[in-house]
Each structure stands twice: as C-alpha cells, then as structure tokens.
Length: 461
Image (cartoon, rainbow, N blue to C red):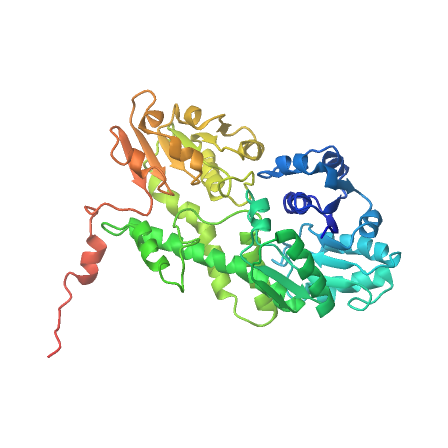
C-alpha cells in the first residue's frame, strides 16, 4: 500500500527517515525552517552528512520533496513524523522549544484539514512532555480534540549516527506510545508498510514510551561504563585480558556481549544527554538518580585517568598522533568525543598533535581552530609520530601495519584503546605496543601480594 508521509525536521535522523520511507515506495514531504535544507533536498542533494543518504535520495528523488510550509505538508500527507532537536537545558532536562514550534505550526494546519491526521513525535522527550506540554499546543492551535479529531503518538527511533538508515529500516523493536488506540493502530499499520519485516511491536501509554526510550540509552551508558571499569581492572591485573573476561560474562543471556567492549567512554549527541535527562526526571519524581550520576561522573573522568600515566612519559617536544576523532566509527559527529578530549589535553599541554579521522576531520579542524593538524590520511598522520593513540575502532585502521607506524625507522609507542591492531603490532620490532585492557603476565603483582600474600589460610574441619 502506497502512503503519504511528512517529516518535520531534516537533520540527520529526519532526512534519513524521509529518504528511507521514500525508498519503500511512499510519497514523502520534508519540512524544515532552514531554506538551505529544503533547497538541497529538492535539488536531489543530502541536506546533512549521513552514511548512504545521498545515494538513497538520488535513487528515490521522484517520491521526495521538501517545503518550509507546514500546512502544505500536513494537507498532503496522512501522518507526520516530527524529528527536531530536544537539547539539554541547564537543569539536565530536555528542552521542548523546537518541538513546541513545530506543534504550533502543525496545529494550525490541522485546523484547516478535514481528513483525520496522525502526529507522531520521534524526538526524545522526558515522561509527561507529550501529554502535559505538547498535546495541549496541538489542541490550542487546531481548535480540535486530540484522540477524537486527530491522532497523536510518541514513537522514538533507536538509531546511531553513521548507521541511521540501516537502523531505521531494521529495528530491534518498535515502540509506540499512543494517546488512544486508534492513533496507535494507524501508526502500527504505517510501520508495517515501511519496515516490511515484523520486529517486536510494543504499544503503551505516552508516559511509558517516553520512559522506555530514555531508559534504553541510559542503560547502555551504564553497560559501557561497566565495560570500561573492567578494562581498567584488567590493565592493572597481571595477565589481565578484558576481551577474554567480556566474552565470558557476555555469554550469559542476562548480560549479553553488545556494548561490553572496554575502551574509551561514551560520547555523541544522545548518550550523555539522555543519561542526564533520566537523572533529572528521576530526581523530579523523588527517585534516586545516584546510579545515573555515577555513570556520568565516571565517563567524564575517563580521559584524564587514562592519560595520567602518559603525562610524564610523553616529552613536551614529542609529536602525538591520534587516529579517530569522532565519538564512534563511521560518524561525522565529535560531540563529547573522548578522543577529542584526549587530543585537547595534549594540545593544552603544548604538545604537537597530528590527527586523522575518516569522516570527522572537518568538524575537528573547526573545533581545534588550527591548534592541531588534521591530516588527510592515516599514514600521513603517522609519519612524524613519536606516540600514537588509537581513538576509535574504525575499520580503516585495521588495514595499517608495522611499516606504517615506523616510516622512518625510529621507535614509536602505540596505545590502542580498542585493541584493533594487536595482531599487526604486538610483536613488531621498534614498536612499544600497549593494548589497553591487556596486561602482561610479568606485570608486578604488588597490590595483590599486599592483599593476599600474608593472609592465613584456614581449612574447614
């Protein structure tokens, strides 16, 4: 069945959703307040950088167009996805200012439409935001009653930058918060015509869906932080190997292996924000936010803890190369990137820093303002390096070999936070290879001896 959709907000998620929906044979109208984004999409160009987006727009351009007019988009569609920013405010809450503007314009458009229409918020918000903050805006500006006269749902996506299109079309599950059953049924039918496969579908109240969404990201940040703690422990344990430990405990179905790879901490535009957002709502409702606060505190302190042993080892006149600057591989985003934090720490110390990232180089260059040199390739970045930090587990870095790190034959130290080059570098001459989270069996066992060496052993009789 061919359907008609509108997508308000043509950022990385919105533009990718619009193109992905069009790729399934549906008509899609994008809406944005930025004229350049609208102009780009109408010209067949991706308004933002996201993996696979340009190709998808080119292939399905006939079913995609954009406008700055909300009324036109609502009038010519049956369902509107709203995908606009909800940034953190000074309290740690998620701001509704951009959603409120979109809902005002959509409400005005609903006032002039005779057919039933469903409005679906995809942006992340906190519990209560839809029912008490946003639905009244639609009712006020439409002069109609939500549920009776038009549909309302909250249906966030579980995607990652760099894989938005794949994640949207292949979800682990679909989450629908519905104001009323009719609204939820309409959205569920639309998803069936977009997704094609039959992922688990969870329908619930608006508040439960809002809590479920924010909880997923907060739980993942907790799991990442636990994995990073394991890596720290293994790095200090004679013969410690975080990957062996993680593989073992990840085999337990209660735990699972995803997001259990110790390395650098979490970053990006969503994880830190959502963890803080859940902490805010927990405190507001009288629940204890201690676990969330501890996760945030440990994550923020990780770059400093990992760099501490290297401050005295790296001479001020040394050249430090950093491979990977985005908060994760296959992304252009550098928000809250742990690798960027490390790079800035060396720059602030006066150390010469060279850096390379397959996608995020331009954004990093703007952020550094010329204080670090962003190179055009990984091999160029390594040419003068005395110390190399592997900041992300980008697949491109696994193609490097020992010759790339010793281009002029001089010794080099490589600190691999993700252990992606252990096979290539662990036994290479002239390279001191440090696989973070792995420790040699010869590591001094002083702390362990102090704990247990003089402990008397008593046997049960």
